[in-house]
Length: 366
Image 1 (cartoon, rainbow, N blue to C red):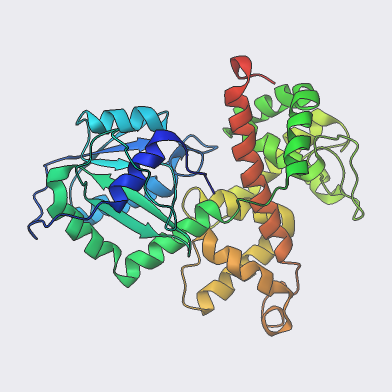
Image 2 (cartoon, rainbow, N blue to C red; image 1 turned 180 degrees about the vertical axis):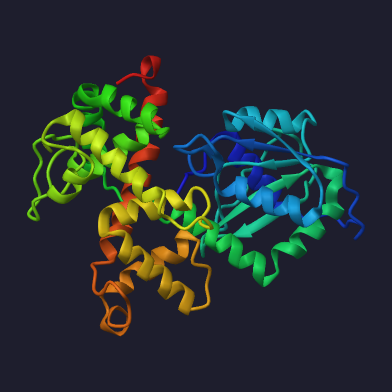
């Protein structure tokens, strides 16, 4: 989980701890709501295809439809700049990229904005944490309206699904994994960066997303070979290599271009109703376990009455492919369904970490 950081966290702890004033039940909303958000690799960001996604992005969109009000979004690069803009009256709602621990007390003597209580929206996302939005002081009626909306079963399920979608993959890597990723980022990625950039341009995919996928597959070792016989930077089978025109799976350029071509072919076969970024995760799972097994997992979700277009639901269904009660009733049979879950979660995590390393590196390089 993103950890609490700096003055923004202290401020929000203070705001959340203040007793809520009494407001009129009538929400007085501006014609257009101005929402301030912090750009962050989980809460609000551009994905590998350049689209805005994230927990706050989807919840803002849902809120906009609920209130029937247009929304203007202003994006800030840091907690500090977000808080300063909100303090200066530049927005109606502030959506920080952090979680609040319910057990943490507010620090004494904080005067970042002042001690006046601000109306807040608290979203329970786990047994220990809330996500919090802060509204300007004269929008107490709107806060009451939105809190009532957030307490509905439908909204609580929506928030729970969003939390699973954007945060379930975190915490997978131990300290050694992180150290080795940083070492290989500097030592090995420069050898192949140009190939990921070429494939990214050709197929309109973020090169760093392809780099994350290749790292999960082979740790950027072009000679890598698994016990099942898959080989190369993108760990292609012989059949897949032949299908995408790869004649030498250990050739780095052929492997990257061939693996990307195969991923794009899968993407085009994902159900049209699966939206972004979920369709990317469906495609990754299919790259790992096969499209047929992904479709079987969607069938399990459908039979349960849940939405088969949500990755959070598919993520829960995939492990069931190893249980006879399920796979004996499905078209493609038994599969090690936990593997594609770990595969997708790991790539998402690597992608987030590599994007952060790229941002921190001089000139964005290795």
